[in-house]
Image (cartoon, rainbow, N blue to C red; front, top):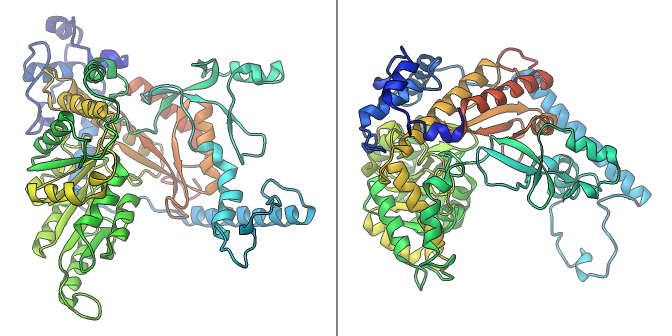
Length: 600
């Protein structure tokens, strides 16, 4: 089934014909949850749409198994009615070889530095010049020695696995430009045309590849299945059909950039519409939109809390939260990831002991968590976080960058998925860069809080406002998700994302891989552990036409290197099956089956 036919599979096909083609597939109406969209396209009622989805369900053969696994995870991590003790943990062999791998890399790096210094030849030798800053008697080093060494001798060895440029839209399939290096990966250049290669044999090595394509400008590229970007609802795949017309039309009335902050001349009617739509979608009084997701956290948190306040943050919160917390001047405590018992003990101690030295009570306490943790693929234990916070009078700040639009029956995020009333969450943050195909972020809360942020938040008062064209993209995607466009495309996207994600996770686990996270999360980290496997996994995937993200230290702990898969509603089952077949071969090649064997 093609991607376009998946989202438009009802057009031109009568229900009688569908029924005759598929005679006996059971209905899954019990999977429906309260609050789903009630609009559908082509005059088709909600029940008819659900029935036709069941008839053409691409996962009908594994539906019961998928629903069981989802229900089991919800019982474990949301309702806490079932114990769980099967979390992946690194084996002793993997830990030993990982440490050994880093020791070998560091020793080899130091040996190469010594030889370069003795022989006076090397890629990283500093060239002599007359800059005054060379005199370290008067100037501090610009870079720390360890960070500089790590970049030179560890990161540059595998630099080709990161920051790969593409020559297409970031949909389910992308064109990755080929890069070459003439200095051992210190720098990388785009290959460009085949004519830049010196011999026919080199040119043949590219054209013989089954994934070879010519990108725009006659550049050498590789056609890859995109398993790494945040195109959760697939708007990058059907943009021309869902959002393109309205977005392009907006250029007739609005500029690409407002060239001003929101407090000056950067507010248009589209900005107001976005904020009204976000508040309505989340069930809050008001919202404010900013032009960058990272800045939404890093400029908002310092306004909400300051000296004399206390931030209690999950230890795995995103670096934007960490930056915002550090810039606030507030005291910071961290609790163990998703451990609400530890959170409660910190809250209890903070209230009993008060501030250090003076023992005065904290002005306010802010608990910060994420809906889905982007490096773990796990959703937050939100019901217990809210319960504990309310018990001790703390405010709750929920970052839904990866969960809004991707979780819940109607895409309203972790709160909807876990059954938490949005009124019990004081601050709801999210971004438009993932599920909505745009850019920027939002803060939603009470009218008093939002009006305060409009005046005091640097992201609103001083930064350029969100592009009006991007605002229209956000509005159009919201309308699709909410069913306000008169179709059920939004509901189909939500179902496709959920099914694709759960199927992919189930198959990865069946391979014996260490897979982190929960069912119903579109993020699937697969543990690699050993640093040498980071580059090997990425390069083997690229060779087979799979674009993946690999992550190592310092983005994750030194033992916890991983590959991170992000699934989209734009993927088809056929594409996922092909990817799983290739990953299965790579798992054998690199010895990654740690769930089955100590040695992988």
